[in-house]
Image (cartoon, rainbow, N blue to C red):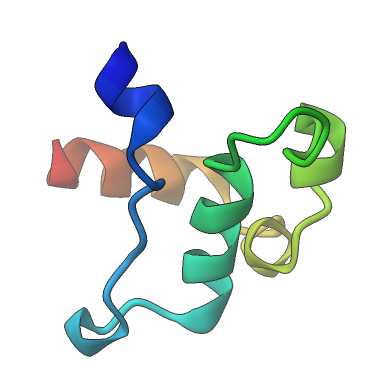
Length: 68
């Protein structure tokens, strides 16, 4: 637990092909400072989530199964 609280939050390496939207979403969800991380409702409004809000859940389930 100390490691998590002391070390900086991980970031996605843009050299690995992660989009700016995904990188920002991950950084927002991993903020450690009190009150700086968005609520679940706020995170659902993030541009990365909104970009895929209209994706059919059937396709999303199939994709998730393919990556785990």
